[in-house]
Length: 520
Image 1 (cartoon, rainbow, N blue to C red):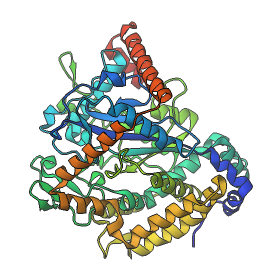
Image 2: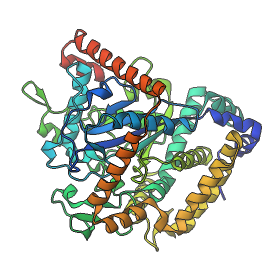
Image 3: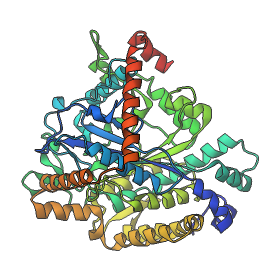
Image 4: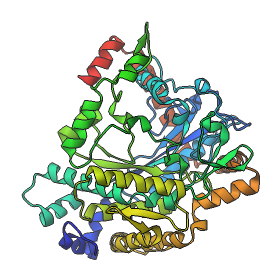
């Protein structure tokens, strides 16, 4: 039977009047995508100046590589806004690609040698150099190729009115910020337990270009010459082949409390690692990495979900969390959907809203090291062979068949779909959940199965992904922005370029002092 930390609260927020508080949920997306040239190779051109300064533009920047665009939507309480704004970002950006394309999938293809992947260059200011050196360090530690993998992140937070009502119901004597952080960490723990549903339902990277392995061995099979695949894989992006930081396997960052989490991150950015020390931090005046510690900065720690807080005075992430508590969570498990031009579909946010609410309300005991190993193993099984007919997952050390477990979770999520429908009116959430539930018993309807079928039909992963990339980019270029949206984006570009120039012109101290100040 489903257990909640406060059953009265579930009933309370299920009533239409109180459910209205949930209309204050704030959402936003971050979508990464590679620029590729007309031959499908990683673009060697600089970030288009028509898109503004990647250091200072609020919505259009780059992630690791100069060719890896990152589009960021402003936070909004309107559930329709993030994808609508993301579409506008895509439309505007597509006009300035100069014969290049936005790569449709999460996994790259023709990226060339590791050394040829260009690191994003943000300028000459200390803040810009800091971002560049951090990326140099990532390439040195894990290889640049891993940093060309793209995904979508979903940022999500609940309104103050919700927390006040929940606190009155469940823990009236606890200080506000402690209560909110404690409940967000309970959500994160449950997400680690049940997040394997995300790659099953939305994973879309079951195949890779053979060139991605750079000669490394794998258990993948050959689909056609040049394409390797997992017959039942859902998200190789989330597997050991993809953006998984195996070098951090022994780095224990627990999520049983805010204190445990932030202290572990603080220790990691200050604890030397012999291998990184051997690589060296500097080569004369050139910096190779920010430090030789387990992590250069907190964001280097890879996790499927992160607690986040924007510092009020520019504090580092761990310091901001320590001082002010959790502000929102960042869910990082979505593959790009290669079948749509903006890489994300509406049912993804609907499902995430329901899952995150269930994770918040459900009992969430501390995660032991045994359970952490079980959670990691379940995710590993789903990303590598989630569509396997006889797949089993681990529940309290016992093997359980996948499909009944998935259906049980959908049953448990149903009250929260109804809660959200009561908040917004209509049946959007219930219908999305009903459609997605069908993928449990019909794995061929999942994006990963459809991607595999398309790759097989079109002669391989590269050919199919390239065709989709061309179609999507051309479709976006054909969707003209209206005059007001165009003016808004052009103004944002000009403002970002002016701010960039001001930062470059401002008096700079030494870079050494700037780095030291960051860790102070």
